[in-house]
Length: 67
Image 1 (cartoon, rainbow, N blue to C red):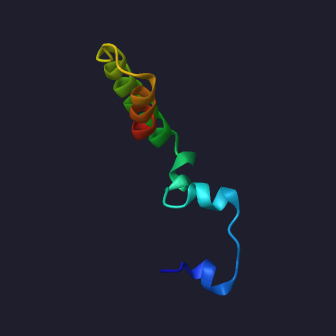
Image 2 (spheres, rainbow, N blue to C red):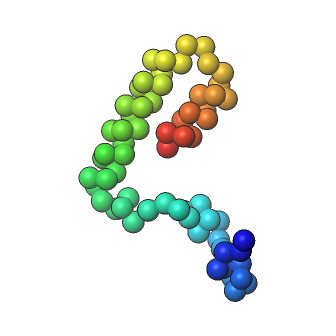
């Protein structure tokens, strides 16, 4: 299946591809940013206390998923 941009021949920039599917407009809202930061910090804190010898690759996958 092709996207609209592929059909009309327009190439998307890296920035367009990177933000595709994310609601980045809300990142200008300080309440949203603070809520995200607090949630991420808490999840990272829990992950840190539960790491118990996990492989670096698994830790990285978990961090990517959290973000």
